[in-house]
Amino acid sequence: PPPYTGVWMGDSKLCAIGVHCGNHITSHGLALNCCTDLSWFEHIVPCGLEGKGVTSLSRELGRHVAVSHVLEPFLDSFQEVFECTLVSSEDPG
Image (cartoon, rainbow, N blue to C red; front, top):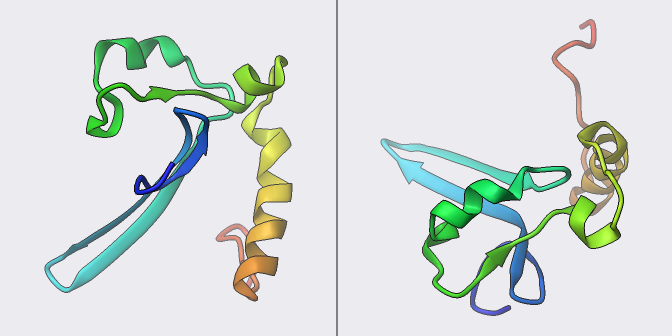
């Protein structure tokens, strides 16, 4: 929910998105919770947001969702949205 970043299901964060800038270098990334052990989040205040929770695709869909099931559709969507071509470091050339 605004003004919070990430992907949310109600009051629970499904995906964290972050950007870091320092020493003339920027880095960015995301963490999509697929089949994460959410019990660890009971011991912290996730993202420093009091009263907000964390969820996963597995919890929301009521079935196991492995990263391997999500990776290809995620990368396909990423390429479409950002109008780019991703190249794997495992690809020759």
